[in-house]
Amino acid sequence: PHYRTDAPKSDPERIKVHTLNFLHRLQARGYDKKDLIPLLDRAAKNARKYLQRSDEQKQQISKERKDSMARCIRLHRLFNPYDPSGSTIQLLFKECILTPEGRTPLYELENLDHSKIPIDRLMLCNHRAPNLGNFLSYRDIEKRSGAKVSAYLKQK
Image 1 (cartoon, rainbow, N blue to C red):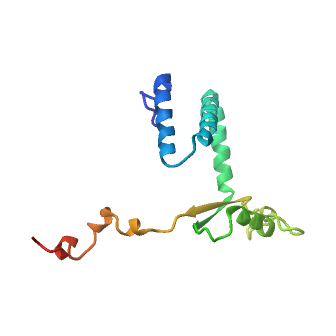
Image 2: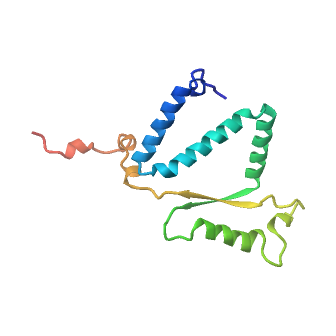
Image 3: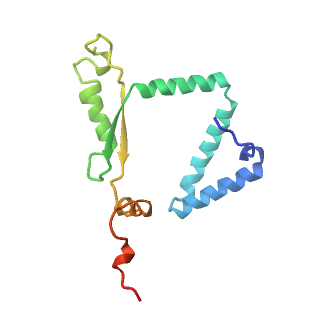
């Protein structure tokens, strides 16, 4: 990992300036200050708690997180506001696939090699649909073949 030598943790005034700057940027994007303050307080509390952990604790937590992610199946989908909600999909996955009533849970079933199926949760990964910006990006326009846009403009 890369560590900055000028990390803001060393200067409380710098921490305050960066936090307030972050808060103002979120407010400019339409977030309400009364909703943000508790989130920032919790983030600061979690950061302090994280910094108090030993290297062994951090490694153990990292290993548990990796193990958990290995037992997770991911459903990637383009976000559509008319699709069922994430909680509805999670509930259906749990009721119909993971732990169907009166049936063996998915994680108790065995594969052809007699090992248990290592899936115990579903993660929904919503992706936004492509928009015009994806197709008209200045980075991509230069790569397109054919005449430049300026060739179609009237010359003065």
